[in-house]
Image (cartoon, rainbow, N blue to C red; front, side, top):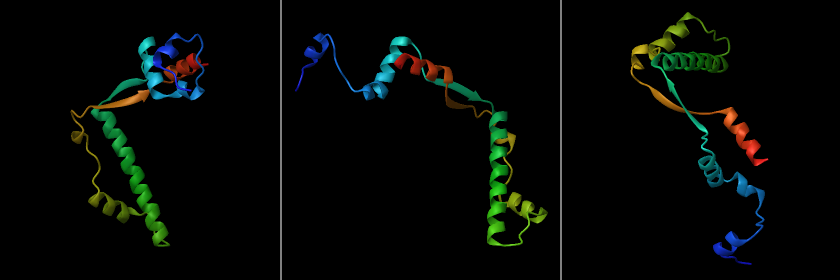
Length: 120
């Protein structure tokens, strides 16, 4: 059966599948009414970006060592390997991140909990 928008608006009860409540447009509508938002803006300082880059660098070097060890049985992560890796992949330097503020989205768990509570 097809209904017009007017008939739906005038109805006392409207039955819809629960999936309507999970739709992104419904979430945005509820957020606009309640004045809440899922996105929190987080600004990372250049020092924090540099620290994260050094952590990723160390992980990449460790992964490369393990890869070489599989390819060459008996390969040992020795000083020569580290010097060779660092020569072809220089460490991230703090000056590379100076003034490079980055905006990231972070979901607030209290927002998510509140949203679930509203839907229950």
